[in-house]
Image (tube, rainbow, N blue to C red; front, side, top):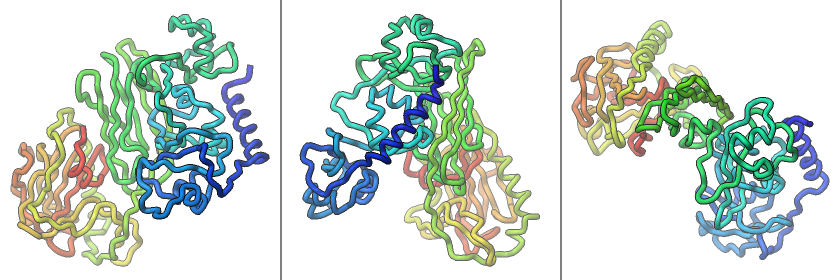
Length: 467
């Protein structure tokens, strides 16, 4: 019997040859019998045309579009030239835990159609966060995901373990052989009712989600999982260990910052679930990581001592040490409040690339800079415990607050610090006054948010409620 690897590679090799020999023909004429694409949020005529290998003019002509600005999310557009394809098409983001094989089996899709629509030449092209063109149906069909098979299992043995008909497993999983199953292979069975949860760590983990997908430089990502009683979770995302905290019985959350200068591309994710008996299940997947598209600030001139590694390295290490512990108690709830009075003004945004004293743009702005536009008051944005309060060379008079679960706030360049280490503070409590101490070109408050050892976009925490 050929291995699964060989089977899929032979399939894609044959498909690639078909695409070369019999390319999809595009014709600039109306095709009233479909297919139809349902416009998704963020789509443009250019991105849609590019996705389907047609021209914008063909798309406009086929749909008699007089004003491209009137094409909004939910609009149905005829796609000219896609012969042999009918019905409605949508774009969906591949969720965490699924690969191409799992998606096709779980949703009961036509593999050849999905490969053709997305012009896929290898399964390795597909990863969590990929945008895939999929057929839309009024009543989606789903399959029930099964526990990955052990090494050396046969379909009869495997089906007997799950109390299923072995032919049901073979047909639902779109397999071509009734011999041995491959360890870790995605297998499904027929299901009824609403969409069952999909997780690569089934049955120990009944739900696994990541938000947002794709990952974005400088932003906070949330991984949520639902597990059986006694199951422990651990993992790693792009080199950072994940810390899963219990949000409610059976539900866990891991918060992780994505570094603002992380390399765009694919970020490795690995997870491990262990039950009370010591049995473990492993899962790994590449996740799409996109650019944050940060601007460049004008070059800055500062005191050379404030960019001297002899001063910056010890100070950076001190801040890393104070923001490294993951306190199991979560002190905040809801969205964070502004750390200054209104009306407020932002003088420099998070993530902007920076150059000091004529050097290269090898730095980035690690927080939000608030100017003095209402008062000098600085407030705690959320409840927490003060873990540092004192003078620093680069950051000036500084305060760090632990909000729990690996989330911290930092407040630099203060004129006065009005709290001390160990103080418990509440949201809206006065903690200091805006000043011009440390590496500054004028008085302002530099506010940072750290999530599991990484500085992230503070604006996200003002706009969104994190679990």
